[in-house]
Length: 227
Image 1 (cartoon, rainbow, N blue to C red):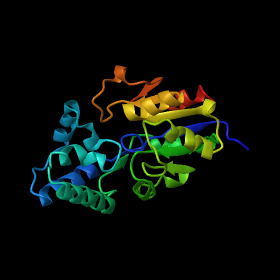
Image 2 (cartoon, one colour; image 1 turned 135 degrees about the horizontal axis):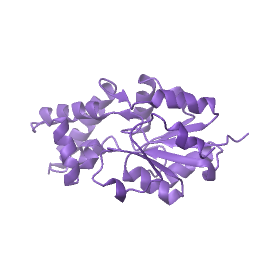
Image 3 (spheres, one colour; image 1 turned 90 degrees about the horizontal axis):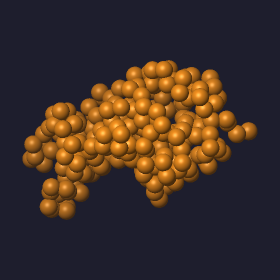
Image 4 (cartoon, rainbow, N blue to C red; image 1 turned 90 degrees about the vertical axis):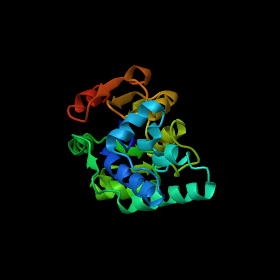
């Protein structure tokens, strides 16, 4: 039996504030390889300079803009690998759920809503984080950057998950915090709920969305309009 509604969630910056642990991994790599470390404000300020990937969606994308400054390809590869390994071991040190997430997921379960994660973080890291932070069991499917041969903003990252869940694209909504999520949703013709203050260089009015929220407090009212 098909469930009546599906919600697709981004992970970093949407369900979980992962920035502190990404910063920790970034600075570990920079210090190890002799480069200057950065503060959280430094990273947030970089967004306006086109380095939003530092705290962006894919796990190696977090540091890619920094690592691109390194000319030696071998060193660059070592830095990326070190980042992934260190982050994997310290994935839930200071990361926290976005306000209201747990309560909303419980409500969705009570409403028999199907839920899945569509993230540009590697699948195994995504699963690990979701389990350690205590919300993995709410989701029927987790699609990471390496789950398919494509990922956001490619709409198939979303539509393939809906198909796997035996859902209905006409009864699906996306929740995310950046244009990567929004562009995928728009191309898939799925309504988009945008979370404010995402790590993106775009202004809110430049990002496709049908609804704008600060966190998950009260989002049930929006979802109820679609049920």
